[in-house]
Image (spheres, rainbow, N blue to C red):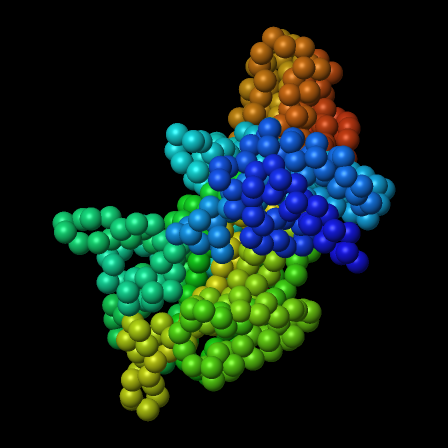
Length: 515
């Protein structure tokens, strides 16, 4: 099936060797083609790619292909090793397959969260600020606030306690946790504060364990479920950064469940149930489940501990009625995990919800509880995140809804359009009445024509437009245009509130622990 890819790889290798005296280091097939990493004396540029294309066009190549991109890539993904030049190739056996793929890309581009994020004024990045660091614009920040508000309320309803922790910690903290030994490549360089080394936190867990250790705990206190929206910082290679889906500073909806060995199985099951509830609440039902096992290189704990923990996770996934695949070696360094991966507009998988088993860090942090026997015992820990990161989750929502967000977390829910300035006073009273009901409203009191106002609000993807003219005022109402259902005709405020009640109710979290 991939024979044509191998032939094309060899031809590409020969052309790059001829043009740049370049050496092929590695190559890997993808669903839509392959990429090759070359050792070149200087970085590739557009002229170099054009030259490669010109040479290839002179050769007898039976498959349909295009050079779809190029970038730098470190050898073995290690920033301490040499920078290679990566060439991406899209390749199919027939021109028709290539055209179908290009059509798919064109459709996906309309859903791309980076394009929509710019178009709708939701977020941006800036070279002045730094790569992989997100600037949330007012409308995007409004959505983020609403997502976090929903999630935080759902957590508090369902047995979680809330916490806030610092953005930095002493090096000793990260030595104790094992991050400096096992996660150092993704951590930023230390800060010197009063002669001591501090690190930007790559994870929130050590802080939660310090809170736990702040007082004596009994088995009667467990489980303790401690949650936080904690912003963390990780050094991702510049070539891997992508909009909101891979960044260097992001906020996790992080939680740590500290429990007895007898409780761990039910706690993993409930954490998975809670994850599925959150995804479904936002309309995200297409995902793939994985159980990720012990990493090949860096890990802590015995094989027996890993085997027992992995079986607990498998049982939870099966009990939830989910099919799953094994991600061999994809676990965290401190334990195996369940990953729920969502699909973006190109069908690529992105890890969002994750549930991780941990039998190691309780010992490292000397965490104890007093058991029913009056003796001290080490608890078990379940790490979990439901959104994963708010940035990546938001990217999935943008692409899933194509920016047409559900009413309850649309940044602006209602646009008010006076047909001319004589209707402004009535519209201002309407605006106030809607805001008093807790709704987010924007009105256009400019002298622009009504059609221009409608066009602007349509491009902003606002769910409802309320148009007001003489007849509407005489009737004590307004004409309603729904983004979803079209023209709904004349309504008064009470009828409008009744019409949107179910959609607004979707933003009210539920208690699900005993369902």
